[in-house]
Amino acid sequence: QVQLVESGGGLVLPGGSLRLSCAASGSIRSINNMGWYRQAPGKPRDLVARITNSGSTMYADSVKGRFAISRDNAKNTVYLQMNSLRPEDTAVYYCNANIAVWVRSGNMDYWGKGTLVTVSP
Image (cartoon, rainbow, N blue to C red):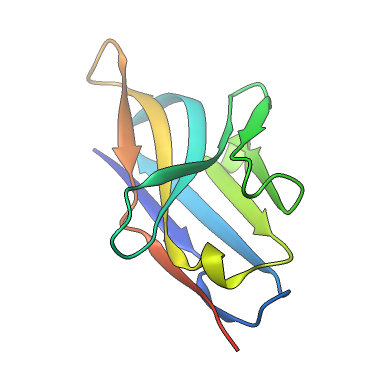
């Protein structure tokens, strides 16, 4: 019923920038929080950034000041601008959204398939 599709990952040099996008589609009534998570090899999936439907944001300490999350509610899309990238930022980045669909009375979380970000010389 709902699909989240990430884009924008790739290979970037240390100190470089990438902009990730995630578009939600399907039978969507409304979207509450949206966020980005990442998972490095052998590590758990960690929260990177989160944004509410009103625009309030929060960030992991490791990315604060370097990353910025934003959203376009008209497009059901969330973005993650990543600057000053470091090798330790290398991970699969996953989009998350808390969504109410027309066939359900409440919200539930949906996940994208992930997009790989590699920061390397």
